[in-house]
Image 1 (cartoon, one colour):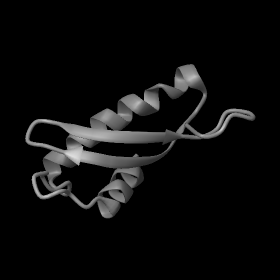
Image 2: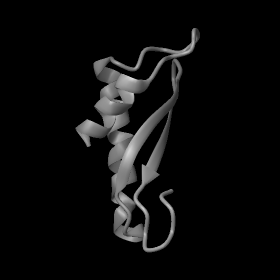
Image 3: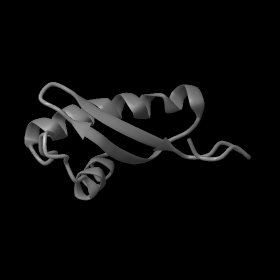
Image 4: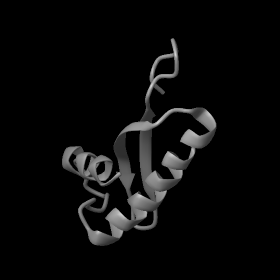
Length: 76
């Protein structure tokens, strides 16, 4: 899970009005969100492959989680 977060932080370039994504608080918040995303594997059978940071605001974080493919289905 830490690898997913660090990879996302390394590739994120915040917009002028977005907060940086490399703070300890951001890492904690992102870890909670990704932990929830990982828990969905119990129901879907798909593990998270990658996380993309779409935005960081004063009070919000937007993450996109890409999951592994299931059978013949493409990755989500």
